[in-house]
Image (cartoon, rainbow, N blue to C red; front, side):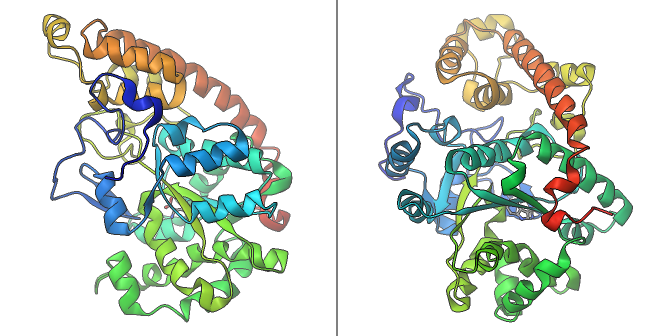
Length: 405
Ligand code: TRP
């Protein structure tokens, strides 16, 4: 652990609010089943260990100071260490400081409907776009999601692609500075760059990085350069090497490792990353919220009654009885309801107060769950109206304005 300044977050009692927002149980264990690849996130994730294993840098006081110098503030998702790791973020911030334009690049694999966990990196990406006036490429890897699961059909993925695009547009990205790339639709813009990348990556490298084996279908084996390509598209669009920053969950890191490996040989900057944690699921099984386990997540299309039911039925860090709760207090750090409120709805002061009231036994779980249910219902209601409006602007957001069909 580096000796970083944790700001106000550590000021609450002896318990640090850092590094623990992974779900119901503390992540500081040695869960031998824990595994993080782009297609699978299981077990309790130890984020400090990931920084070491992946060889990334922690988001520390220095980086936060750099952000503050540029924007006059530190975004809560940085302060709270939801974005906890990076590569070359300092390089990107220096470029911005020197008045250079950078691109943002992020994406979505359309394997299902979008839930609240997906929105946090997107909200942060929109924030960066607004602050720095950056252009954004948003890739939809419909090909990847077709290949990565044996039972997904192309029809299903087409539907999720459409639905997911409505969510993306509803985030409010600047239509003049945002282009959505759907792999199967815009492949002709991706393929020439993907080929250059593919030629420079051996099978043994990609086996080691992605864990491919003899039973992996060859579509998957050929896919990584397609996700790498948008890292270099800005340089081609702008006609000169252009810095790119990728906000993404840490499970996407293997792609950027292989991309960084080939970047300089191809005459481009290595793409920089800022890595997020996963949002805890609403039940006790740990891991991230999952589209394939609908009860563990609040979807952007859920009806208010459904949201209420999910949230009121959520796992919490509470004791078994009210008497025990009053006596021992709750485990706020191990409580997904606490983390949802902290990341999405409470400001830091309110959240810190909630924390103290919880661990001292003053606060019962019913109150937090009801706060979260109310906030989530109104958040999703607003989002749904924006999704409806988004239907009219799909083509405007598409790369080269090429229609989806
Ligand atoms: N592979 C990602 C997923 O499954 C989608 C994706 C494509 C992406 N390009 C990206 C995510 C860039 C983050 C940043 O969700």
